Image (cartoon, rainbow, N blue to C red; front, side):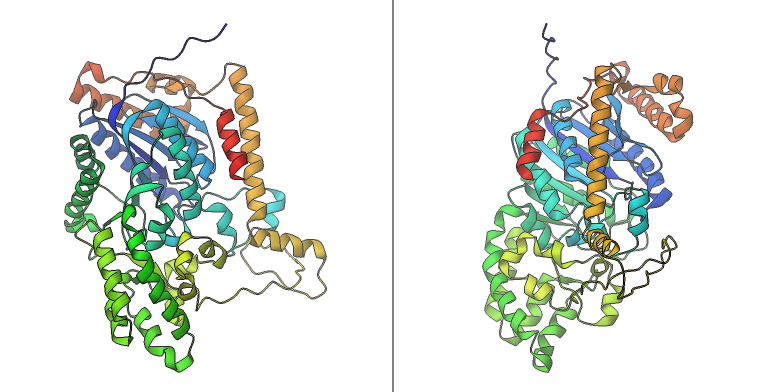
Length: 512
């Protein structure tokens, strides 16, 4: 006998989807603590606005907790099995769940966590096994399989159109170095408005209550995006919110205007690719690029670069690029960056972004169609294939392996696979398959994901294990009772599905 259909969820003007990743080795326990404090601000902010105008859906991956939290603020919280936050399929699963639980006319996405600028977002903890442990040593290649690259973010957002039946209207990055042309080119046709900073963003605090209030007031995406940037500008005008930084700029980019950028950028890239390679004759162009950086030695401020290269025979394309950027950026701050691996050794060492730079990742970005990769990767050293490897220890202390010309073939192959992220990716996919099998078995045994309220957490002993988790729910329900009255008590929402849908499997196969 077929199951009765679930009651349709009320459609609201906006849904804010917040993807918070504290499960990052660079953050440790401190990032967990900040994520908890920030979640409290999100809860209070969401419950302070008209709930008929706005849903707020959160997925939070703590490093110290073995599960992933999903919450519809004011309605309930669910536990998910631990997953790889840097896998685009995990992000797409969040979109699918958010659409089912929080249907809306428009969608805004906030990404929260560490960033590598043009080289991606987040780093989930690597899979641990006797095989991977032997070869998992610090290496600039290994992060590729553990990071959500811009290409993967684009893939997730484009797949989101299938379940949301529209593009994500606004993507706001609470991540460092995301106001770049690389980001804009990658997410065009996947998101309309991008809000990001060209600089470092303090991890602590955002004006969530004011931002949610602006979305509740603004039914139109463009005006809403402008209002969000205004709130961020006002927030960071207060010294205490900058946490010691001189400024924390944010830029609003309209990806639909990006086509006007392409031709002047292509003309500039063609000239700079040739001129920067001309020994001492190319020094003026290399100097123009080097002295145009602001936030990081590997990120060239595009407007500053245009001013400098006008003096060297590139006046017309530079002026056209300035005009195009003025049209594309809708905020008072017009700061947009481009990646360029530093020419000077000193700058290479000081750069945060250059530390994570790899040719394969950058070469797959959409911006290479303009030819900018010829400039961006000019000074980046080519990585030579490693010599055969003989391991005399397991290198868990982080020391470098000893190389020998008489090493065995198997360690050499494993070394190459590890450098390309293949071992990590296979381990991650294998673990995902195992999780799905267990989830399906659990569902068949009526042990699927359940709604958790404060009492069920206490009864299960989970509150004692997790510490702050039960307290978070108590805060939410208590705040709702005080502000919104009895009607705001947390009620169980419809239970999400555990297993990947057949449609999702088909999309995954098609993507591969």
